[in-house]
Every structure is written in C-alpha cells, then in structure tokens.
Length: 129
Image 1 (tube, one colour):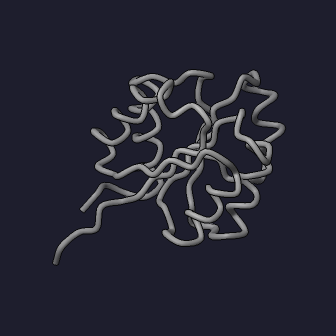
Image 2: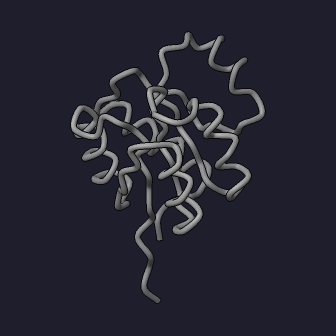
Image 3: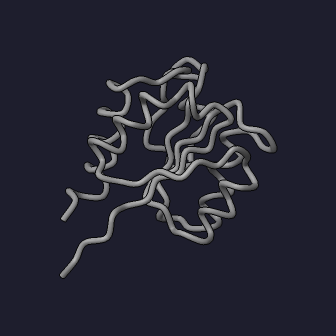
C-alpha cells in the first residue's frame, strides 16, 4: 500500500529567511511544505489539505501566532503546530496553554530546530510508514 507524503505548512512572511530550517524539515520529516504568507492563507490551506504540521511565525500578517494556533484547532484538532516566538519559555508556556502547541521555535530557526521539531512531531504521530 503506498504511503502518502505528509504535508507541512509554513505560515510566515519570511520564507527565504527560513529556507534552511524548511529544507531540513523536508529532509528529516519526509514532508512537502506549502508556504502561507498570511494567517488567512494558512487557514485556507489547512482546511483544504489537513496538514500534519503548521509552523507559525509570530510575525504573520492578519492574526497573532497563538490566535492562529487556536483557529487551526477549530479547523482540525489533529493539526500539530509549532510557533516561532521571541517569548521566554515560561512566558510562552503560559500564553499558549491549552493550544496543544508542540514547541516554540527560535526567532530564526535553523537545522537543529528542524531536527528537534521532527523528533517532537514523531513522538506524537509515530514514525513515517
């Protein structure tokens, strides 16, 4: 039985700046990545494609990152999220409580952040078939 390649969405106005992170996410996670330059587009893509993961940049136009994480839960509670954030760990935890966010990411995440995110994702979803 053929396996389906998982889909991840990068909701960010900075796809070029996050390219190294995204490339490593693709390499390690075996997923294809769609870019959403706004919160509205991220919600459209999530509703249409049921992604495994949405990475949300805190600088996303149209909606705050945590607000978008909550909106994605209403679209599909099975969508995993990670948020690029400048908040300190405790502050982030308090602000994001109840949103089921896998993890916060550094303001400009790199390959090591992608590796940590894939590990966290696979701990929740299991290995790719």
